[in-house]
Length: 289
Image 1: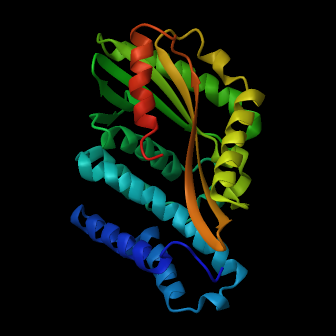
Image 2: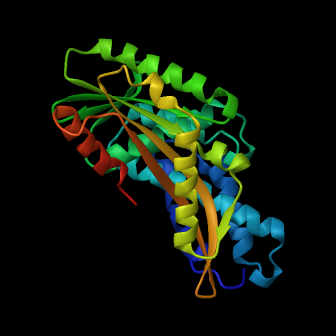
């Protein structure tokens, strides 16, 4: 680990400190949340010789960066659109387990974190987002409203059951408006394809990227979740997402990257209003790639 490509102990610490300062402006004391734990750990590593890193130090460093990257992504959205409900959820997610790999399947903090992560995609690309009780997310589309249901999948044995629930929830949401409506189901499958959020490594950055994408495709072929959404004429897509901490050797340097990977199971037809709406959605979900 002696040749690390990114400035973990400079750039990341600076961004994390900036995030903590921003939290203070919205009434959150970072030192009393898991953000404070990340700050203390990165500070500890910054004064330690890299050749003295233990295996535990290296592993925890990569997992810490995975958490920091997701929180910074969420911050980008919340700074662009002032969501009072978003700030309330932020307070809840910062009280969760420090690392996704240690989180239980029934912890609400990570469920809220997924909602904020997905909301940030839409906000960063200029869409107004409402987070209320009618759906996990409601997004103002040019010709109507997009309802979004977000689910974390952790148990292979419950994948189809959770998909069926999400499909029914979307149908129920449509009743809340007379506008043109569309549906989107988002499934975070990180813990299915990489149990316990294990670190993925490879011989190159592109190799790691392709490996994770292959896992997403394998999941889509193994679990026929589309059958629960096919009757829904308003649903545009099933968006599979994962966040995986990775490192790869590139030109004798260790690249440490948190990969936000996506794969769509498209439900919209090739032509017509739904096809146009999916085109808009695809530009949103490709943001940041």
